[in-house]
Length: 359
Picture 1 (cartoon, helix red, strand yellow):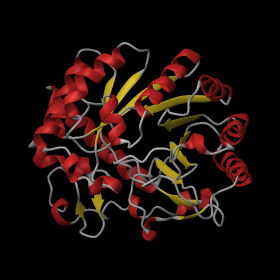
Picture 2: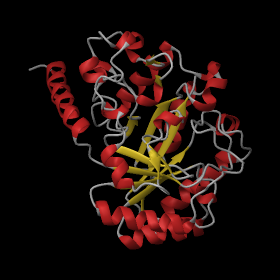
Picture 3: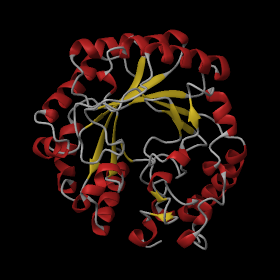
Picture 4: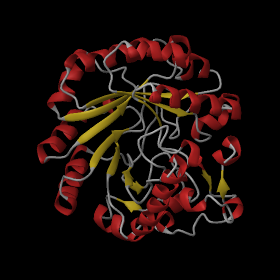
């Protein structure tokens, strides 16, 4: 059997398994958005984080209660707490919350811009039980600082990354790079930098048309950019380097499983859920924040009841089978692609790789 046939067979099995997940979802990743505050103001931020007052912010006691509740109802094995923001380390009670999570037996990892990770912070992260971390580096120094609108951000992020490496004792240290039309020419030079330091993987993703990125359409990748990006990642992976494309987007039979270690499936509401900084319960934090997509609030509902009875939009196989997706011959594998790039007003995908890649 040729390679394409094998992949098609595997994706067919995954499509059948997804039908089971719609009926009986499995929690694998629970995101805690500890804060919407951030010391950077990135052009791509899907959550539009920055400096500002957040009403009804969950307290330290709230998080202790949430963690107790989740341990009672789900245990601590089989899924991971994914800590994000904003910049999570801006919370003054960060180590108090995460130390408590570690004490209860939770496995947790974090995404961070890295700028606040001194040697002392790196050590405290290890003591608090952090297992994985992804640090954002979005280009060479000038590009990174301009994209994140933070003077000196690149230098501090790289220092934070090295502090984590020097501390040792973490299961996985990753760099995530958001590629734009302007920064795509820097991939080779970034590779040379990351190849010389002891990171475990490099996650490369495209700028998505969401959040603040909608204000910068000139930064979105062109079809030629996408084709170059995918061929670049594929070549590096074939050479044995730990590069991977992000979890977004069905890439067609030719490229599926070539750019990452799994076949595409949107995890929102079937593997993944999130608790926002104000207690709202949602699916993936990248999805547009609309009232109809909020499943409940942790101050009023238990997470268990929401997980078991909510997320209807994400578990309805027909919800996005409409418009240009209705008769698509790739629907079985794609199922409407990534939920965070679905236009809920037009009922069609904002971004689809089918025409770009010609599959």
